[in-house]
Length: 410
Image (cartoon, rainbow, N blue to C red; front, side, top):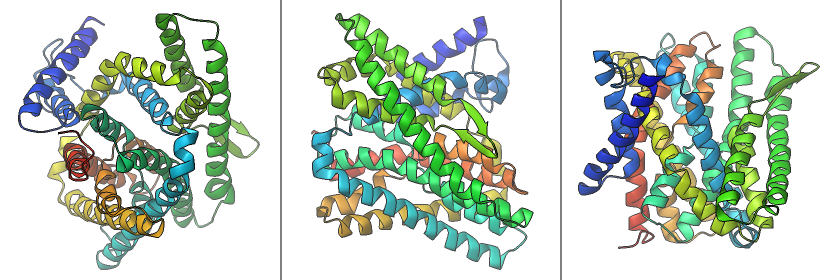
C-alpha cells in the first residue's frame, strides 16, 4: 500500500510537471500525461523495480482499474451535460445523424481494407478478426477530446457538435461491435446466434438508458435536501460513483446475458440531471475542478498500460498501419460526408473528422471480448498499437483542428 501511494503521488506530480514542458512546446496536457505514464510504466522506470518508483508490472496497473473506471464515469457524466434541451433543439438531429453515419462509414472502410488484406495474405489475418477490427474502429475516446476542450476553453458550433457526436459515437460503436463480433464468432463456430448479435447489444443500450435516467432523477431529488456547495458536490460525487458501480452489474435472464455500458449510464445520468436541475451548470463547473486529479491519473495510467513490446512484431505493425490509415480516412471522410448531408457549415465539415481520431479505453475494452477469437491476441495488439499512435498524436490534432476552426481563444 505504501508503494502504491508513492506511485500515485509520483504519477500526479510527474504528469503536472510534464504538462508544463508540453505547454512550452505547444502540446496538449493529455499528451504530456500519456508520456508520463509511458515513462513510469513497466517498460521504462518500472523496469528498475525500485519501490515506489514507477509501475513494475501490468498487473500493478490493472489493480488501479477502479481509478480509471471512476474517471470514465465522471467524464461521461460531464459529457451528458452537453445534451441540454436548448442545444438538442438546434443541433440534436445533426449530432445523431453525423454520429451514426460517420461510425458506420468508418467501420465499412476498415472492413473493406482489412478484408482485401486477408485475400492477399490469408494466413496473416482472418476474416472474423478483420470485421471485428472494423467495428472497434468506430469507437472514439471521449476523455482525450473533453480534456483538450477544457484545457483550451474551446467553444463554438464545432465544439458543441463534437461533444455530442463523441457521446453518440460510443453508443453506435457498441452496437456495431456487438453485431460484428457476433458474426465473427458465428463464422468461427459455424452458426449465427441472433441473441448475441441483435438482442443483447440492443438490450444493453436500453438498460443503460433506463438506469441512467433513474439515477439522474434520483440525484436531482437528493440534491434538494442539501444547500451548501460542499454538500451538493459530495452528493454529486457519491452518485457518480454509485452509477459507475451499478453499471458494472451483470445478470442472465434465461439465455440472454444482460449488462450495462458504463459510459452510456453515466452520460444519461448527466443528461437527465442537467435538464431538470436549475443549479446544474454551477454544480458541473465545481465538479470539474474536483475531478481534475482523477483525470490526470486516468491518462497517466492509460500511458503506463501501453505495451511497447508490440513494436517488435512486424505483422502487428503492418496491420496496425493499415488499421490506422483506413480508420483515419473513414473518420475524416465519413464526418465530412455526413456533415454535408445534414447541412453543417464548411468549417465543421472540414475539421470534425480530425477531432474524432483519438481512441483509447472503449476500444481496449472491446478487445477483451475479442480475445475469444482464434487470433484474438493479434486483434488486441493491433488496437494497442493504434491506441499508442492515436493517443500520442490525437490530442494535438484535435487542438490544431479546433484552433483552425477559430474555436480556441487566442
